[in-house]
Length: 342
Ligand SMILES: [Zn+2]
Ligand SMILES: [Zn+2]
Image (cartoon, rainbow, N blue to C red; front, side):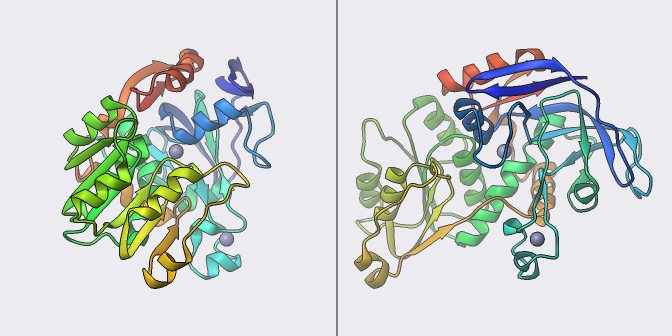
């Protein structure tokens, strides 16, 4: 089969590799669409993920397809079914799983390799994190289940309430998903910042009340202005730099929550005002990844039309063009997600 292999920084090649063989409890899926993700882009630009990936590596983790082989002992999945699976499954046994912090599982099983003609889903992921896709849903919409699941986990932890003012730093796919979810949670006013006008334009179309181009305007000042110097109830950081994390803290009202969603480069730190933390009772919240329950909820929300992910998929390209796809995402920021169709 054909699969994209990453050899190093910006060195992505489509090669012929063995089609995976499945064992008991596993399924083989013909990938029909895989969507690009900020994490993939980081891996492409950096050429590695420390300690996680050995080069050359298959990658891609947002996908949907058709079941073509079913291993012994797999109950409900049948050949020909349209499915999606998450890129992880917790062990249910470790201390974090025992505390129901499934996203922090100490023995998480990960699944990469969506930019390929076929993907093998291991037994644990078949059991805990595979779903059938309703007939009316396209494969590329179903693929976006993964980032939406992560965002649902984040927004739930941040407790966005009816009428809240929510400020979002970053109008990439993750920032925009936060916008869509915060709206449904009943946010009263949503402010979104980015440095790319096209993205801010889309944010407005998707329901942002105010947008700020951070190249021209100061998001901290703007948020204060819009809230009568009060600050936003919830501020969501969806960029992932220490500087924007620190800005995020400057935009929260007393007793409000700063959700640090965007992962920063390794070994970075931020400065936090002790006064703000103590007298201002700021909650600084980090969330990472998501759980199988959120994956299920995310697919249901996409299927019911509650969350429309279509505007986030700005282009479709062939597996053979994957290098070009990532170069496009690196250079032009007007594309959000590209659906790779093998
Ligand atoms: Zn992703
Ligand atoms: Zn675990």
